[in-house]
Length: 104
Figure: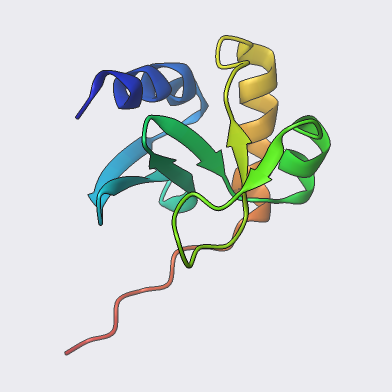
């Protein structure tokens, strides 16, 4: 785990159980079991939800990697604890539950 990932974990952990998993050269970011975004090349990208669209309205929409959906590029405001809490609480309520793995 690198320094940027630890910084994201430190800023977002008060909102709940945050897990960062390596995946194909980047990292997937889960909050209470729900995929909320990606970390690619030391940059954070969050999924679009009504809450993230409202609270991060000025954020650039970008493709974190080839073939991905556009995500919100989050480059600052990590230390605004009130914003982060509202953002993650809203996203967690709006994003679907993780699909169970199929039995083999």
